[in-house]
Length: 186
Image 1 (cartoon, rainbow, N blue to C red):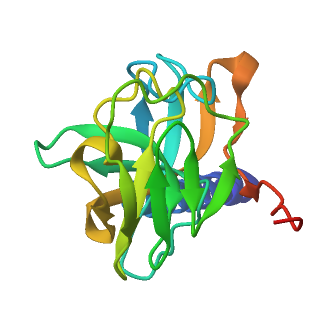
Image 2: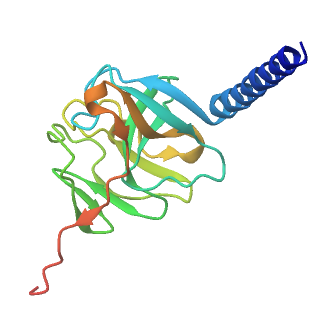
Image 3: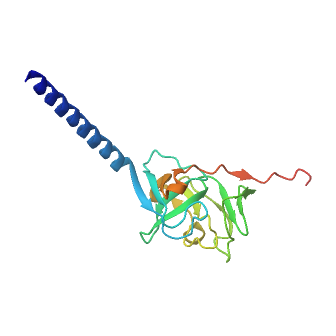
């Protein structure tokens, strides 16, 4: 009888521990992360419609890295997925290509071209502004070429993981920015 009572007590203690740990993990993940489904092709080829993603929520201490894919809320309260092209303090020039501080950005991840004059000229980003564009340049509307730079407080979070479809599961890492070498002859 004592053995059964000890076994039942240990089982109840183990189940209680698992439930408490599950509750703590649930609270941690529900406050720090959220999930989102991709709708549309503005981020192809990196993300496709019906991809499911985990997003780490932003806070005032987060810094957003160039090349990261972020979730933002536009002025019409739409939720958008875009890539960070420019960060605070940089000068951005958009035309048939992207120039950062006068250097040509090599964007192997980008598809299409900017088809109309959208956000032309050289524009310096303020201390809390980011320039965000979809990877599929022909289909990415709206983005910073339409509504201009995005303030840090409008960035909801950084995409960190794709968990669906299984064939594309994995970590989403920021693309390392590369620039065309400067011609030393001129």
